[in-house]
Length: 510
Ligand code: HEM
Image (cartoon, rainbow, N blue to C red; front, top):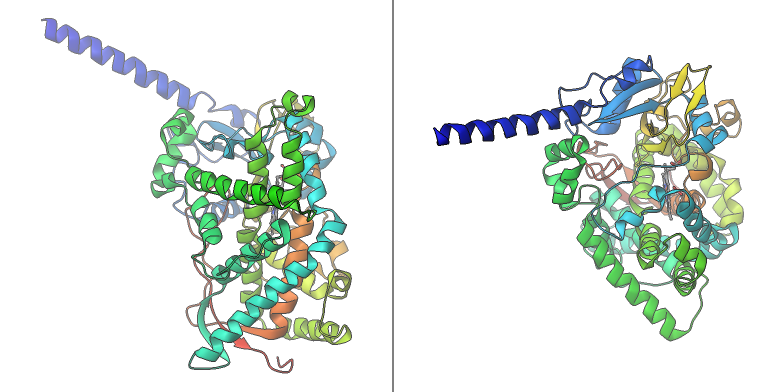
């Protein structure tokens, strides 16, 4: 009898717990439907994203946009989110009425340093951090970085040419994973230009710095992607997982390395006016009232340094390598571009710097078109901080709702981009670019919370591509493909290696 009662009590407790969990999981269901927008039908418990990672999420976003239109609702687990792909609505949310959308979600990176990720800091703290970091990418600082960028690219080209000499065919390297090679080069370039350091073994993909980036982007929990879907519905599970967005151990390794760099700089007493100096100045201000008031700590500085070190390489290497892939598939575009590049190099005696980049508008158009098609950072977001009503779009957005801007999908909006999947740099040439809606291309975001690294990234990609294309030709192989992985960290869309053959270009031959 006692046994039966005990079983009954345990069963009752079990039923109560399960019912509470079900109630919790489904608590927000119906909120999006009440807004009168199309909604991606949610699973009984796991929201609309229950089969997350079955296909690459940005590809899923495009399918949703094509099926449901420019504005639709998605339950990311239990979180009701509004997805917006219309450029006019993107303008309202990110720029005109940005005071109503003045936050991003507070994400759990499972690490005190990674939790200081600048995008996700609360309002006032974000403003302090952003204003401290912004001077790092002023026009004059970027100009100063030019030589480091050029030298890094030229060393890389020299390395490739050396490898050719030792291979069977002295003018060709076969089956190079071009995105991986470029990522190692860009790691070297960022360290030279932002930290003023030259590293040994710099183009080896197993070098310590490159490995740090790779480790950071391989959070252990992603080995079990279906568990990640459950964390969207039951966020407390995150506390038990070893990092779902980025890898905390790699973050700790970075802190150790960067503190060593700062110590060396302090000991040497040298000044380079770079990111290391900026972080040292910042560290010296840590005790001030303003820093204390906003809880700016050593972790905040380390996370900012991490952003400078890491955030651009994979994005820039994806954009450049996808551009090389499309150029190789479109010889007419490639020839037109090559003509522009060789003319400008000849005019300036083989040295292109910052002030000559305006003479390469077609190259800029080719980069913008690659950035449109393959924005590695495939979504960005805003959180509504004050209720917002808009008649034009018939929207009544409550405080606390997350607005997702699916960049990858919005950049393919069929009303703004004819043949959206086609690589057509002509969209961004000086004659045509004013015909585009100014908010149709969202690769770097918009408004006060846009990407502060855009100027640095665009200058780097412009210079690196000019030098690469002058000396090297990239050819398609039968196994070349641009295929994106279904599972990736945070909001990044990693892809499988882009294999290409690399040839030495002689005397400006096409
Ligand atoms: C091709 C390269 C890059 C692309 C495509 C890119 C893209 C983006 C995008 C889409 C956002 C979100 C913007 C928004 O929500 O409106 C962002 C934010 C950010 N990016 Fe970049 N980025 C690139 C390179 C860099 C670099 C080199 C840095 C270097 C420091 C950087 C630092 C940041 C930071 C700190 C934020 C957060 C901004 C904030 O909330 O204040 N990015 N980036």
